[in-house]
Image (cartoon, rainbow, N blue to C red; front, side, top):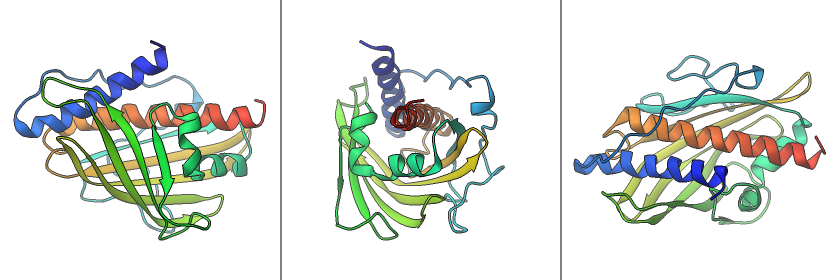
Length: 220
């Protein structure tokens, strides 16, 4: 099994365990998210410092589970934005995404809906399942930002609503990408620390995959 697959398996095991805690069963804890060194990860935050917004709208201010991070990608702004917002192509560069489909036509814009799936391995508390996430775009500004929200459901697992905001800024050397996501719901909030670790591990993996995909498109 590759290092990437192993990391993803740990991520989804942590997610399943954190959600299973709502039923009083917590068989293990996730390893803390490790911060990479260097300017690409110069600012990580938990809480409301450094709020990430799109057209004045951010994540759920009342959510107890939240994580934010940023990364420098050595690729043009337009390339990075298109890579991230071409949601139907996510499976091509994210091992954690099994399928992704648009539930509508035309360019991605406010009101667009897409559904994507991600695997969750079996744990002592929950069976192996596939988590289906239905995301609705709330705000989008071309080459600048995008915000979507929606529920995630699998066998024995449910997140009432995940709200995810991304911003893209042209900087010296490429594009600075910042993201923040929140989860709400009884299962997600049954163990806030563990859910936050699972969320953080997922976002860090997503950022690294986005960086690799965008830089590959520009030959970096």
